[in-house]
Length: 259
Image (tube, rainbow, N blue to C red; front, side):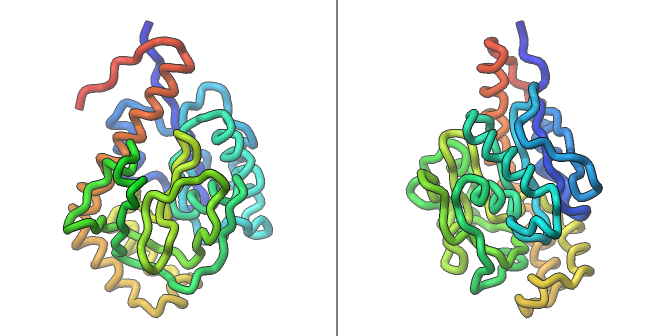
């Protein structure tokens, strides 16, 4: 018996940040990505629905605890906590990573440094040996390029979390909870055109950064090939984790798609 196509549930928190490239990569690896457009009023479940093998909470301009701004955030945090408790794979991106931390006992606050544009991150020792983050590909020395747009930081990790990615400006750039839940501060999903489109929205983070948004966008465009080379292998490794969960749930061994 073969496993039916595993489903990844993506939570879209902002109209400008759908799954983008990362969603395409997951589909290339044989997964089905279903989007709950919370930002457009679609309801977010507070527990992981039957038949879902992975969660992909996405980015957004609000904070992880801005429930008055985004009324679905309590349900999303409960959803992520349920996934962690049940060992269902999670890959949280930017706000999604912050929500994962906040949902499981971590703390998110406005940080002293706002990161917009290309920011380099480094793997910790745990990150180098991690089966998912260990697949991220440095371009020069230990540095891995990442597209970033954030002013909030995860200042305290949940109990038991493992720090996997870091840099001097923002200590928590990536972490793992248990064996299957990952949170990233970066935006591996974003393509250059989308990032440049964000420059037309003068949000608090952009104003606080003092950066020229168009220059930051051109940084991302110039680095796009390196960004794909860095984060596509990590995404494939996480896709394998979702396949493994689907296999365990159905009690059979899936034939992974050829690429």
